[in-house]
Amino acid sequence: MIAIILQPTGCVKAAVKSGWVARLPLEEIAAAEIDRLLGCVLSYSDDNFDAALALGFASAIRREWAWRSKRGESLANLAAFASLVEK
Image (tube, rainbow, N blue to C red):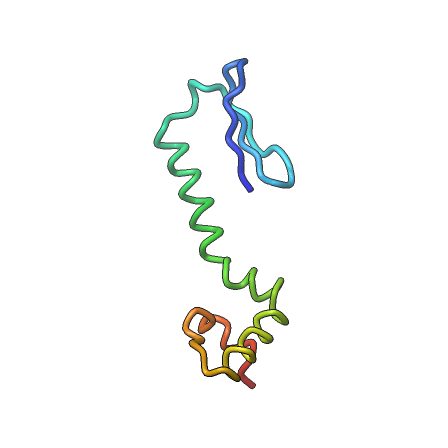
């Protein structure tokens, strides 16, 4: 989670779930910089999404793969996790 907060004092704060990471005067922040920051957050989260799912949900993914395989259902949206079930 990331939060960008415009404070009544005229400051902008940026935070991630673990805590505040930046506090800058509003006049120091341009729209292009906020766009760049949010683009970075999106890129970092997208680049690591499958790995995070595999770490947190490996057993559930294996069960879902087995369930779909047994019934002959599509595994297309689980293809990124084939390494979890293939030996």
